Image (tube, rainbow over all chains, first blue to last red; front, side):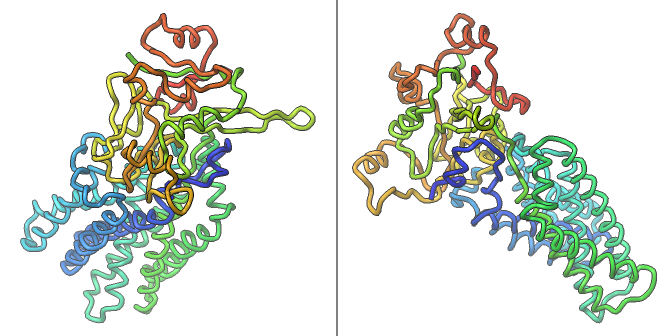
Length: 287
Length: 200
């Protein structure tokens, strides 16, 4: 069906939710954004803690997860090569370059592991990969909730948090883990999760106090029909459960199984966070 | 030269003839209306009234859809018309997201209104290059402009509420209408500078 939204909504004046990037095949795009974030975040977390085994996992998530999900989302996937043409103006074009350069340089870094220049370059493109999705959303003037400078920071923050969470879960499950890695990941998880609480609260509050459409988006998430997903998915799974495990682990001792639970819970919350942000993209009435 | 449109809402009767004429002229797929007439109820009984606002692609001077398109499929002609090259579109739908006016449509599958195409639909399949998996939209009836005709929505407007012309010409009818009637653009605060003006 060649229809952007329902027949009734097409002819009524009022708020309108974006559907192209979240419903039906739009879920593939959400998955691509998520896998790009987790892969890039895991790469950066692996760089920070010095975990070599994390690098091929991160590269695999991006190359075998994000890339194919993007292709499957496209209406004309065989023409994907055309998207290389406009990096000077389109964030989708830039994203493709970031992804390819990340895979290339990340692979080289894995091969020549001690090379500092490759570490810096691949780290730079990993960061570009996790932040560009936020810029892609922020470049949409039609949706005030997205057209906000905090969106790229939230996407980057969520990516690093979920990358650290994946690394933490992997370390917690593996009994041969290097203890210093786990301690660093606990510190990283604590800093990132706390930062995300501040970021999300600031972002929602700022939007609530701005335009009518942005306020509508916040209402839709906080007490509208998306509230269950938001409070359970984003707040409980993504923030409360991980923090309630990481904080005791940071100050004392917690069984490894609980650290794995914190990591997996954060990964689920991170997916719902992106889902919520995309779902709450609301256009203002045209008049 | 910059094509533009003025819609005088004081004259618009909400007859939907522009919408029907557009659909007939452009053979748009099932569920797609390049021109739509939005209806809004204002006031309360016994003083409630319907207001009608026809919308379509605004062919903005600073179109958000052009800059976000990763392939260059969406581009702006010298006369201001924003067009889509169906052979370049990859169906990423970034332009739909970026457009504040919701006037772009993604053709997932070209379905017909009935089980088999009507004669009209069969003719339309050959007449218009709407490819599955791509985005389509109004192009101010470029094929009619090439023949010296006005867009179908303008030519068919029963109450003559639509005026088509050159925004760059200060002596054109639409430029004078805009200047003398305090015409406004939709969502002007988005900075897209639409080429469609409304008189209320």
